[in-house]
Image (tube, rainbow, N blue to C red; front, side, top):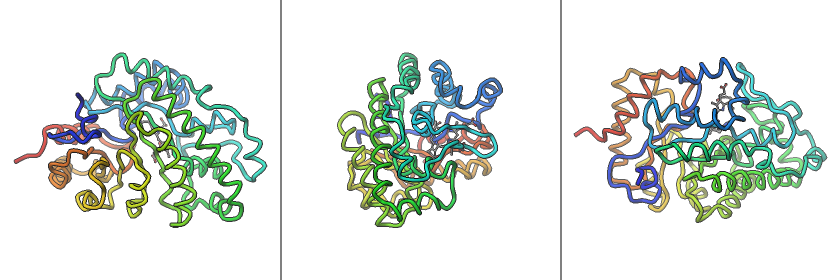
Length: 338
Ligand code: CP3
């Protein structure tokens, strides 16, 4: 039995499992080599390359879980709004939505059908992978922000203007995205993933009432549909003050960013919910002894917690030294120093 699955089931008695968000990515020299030959989207579309990139960090560092190499924005591409990834600026939607009529004009299709390469990649992985595999999707609010802004935003001006001025059509958009997300998650379960993570990266930018109606309500709907099939971990960056709300919708685990104390959060989070996180990704630029000390501090704080999963508080940064990742994984897998 894997230590990651045991932690999700609340049965882990030893050192915590560790995996890192964005563990398969640009900080790996072998990934950068593959990117000389293929664009990011080309990598995402080929099952054998999905499997190869997913396995790179497992082969290099031996994390306790793998995450499918893919992207939350592929759903938007399937909806026909045009998706590009540019090296300097990140994702770009060619035809962002601007008004209610644009929502109604979206094709009535199931994204999972045009994204079957994700399912093929998962099936290949399940034949060879020695650790559990995590599937994922973006949450409806975060996806809506990309399809409206057209790119990663700082202020979410267009998204919020639309949300406040025309909540009805904003809800229609969220409903439509929720259906697509559920379809993608079900496809990944059917293909064999062992757990799921739902990324609501930008929900933390919402005001409280809007967080409840435009993010939380949809997360709840998704969780209800997936419940009892595979464990689901929720990641809502910047929403650690909304712990009561997040626990109320019944995820199996919650992933936290680095500005909260996990031991303190454990006193309010019910014991049947796993806690994942939460080192600052920038810590991986620190001297190796500092990385070891901070990893030890976090492990000591969560000592004896059968549902703790070691991770960063957000994705690993592209310029992270490989040696830092090696030392972090080793430190956690050796367990607490006495
Ligand atoms: O974690 C993993 O290793 C699995 C694969 C994965 C990727 N993106 C690969 C990727 C996952 C789980 C994601 C999630 C994702 N994608 C999120 C939610 C998590 C978060 O970071 O908040 C979001 C918001 C996206 C959208 C996205 N994709 C952005 C904003 C960018 C560009 C900026 C950046 O951080 O790289 C991407 C590109 C992307 N997604 C890359 C990878 C490996 C880099 C592509 C490249 O240039 O090679």
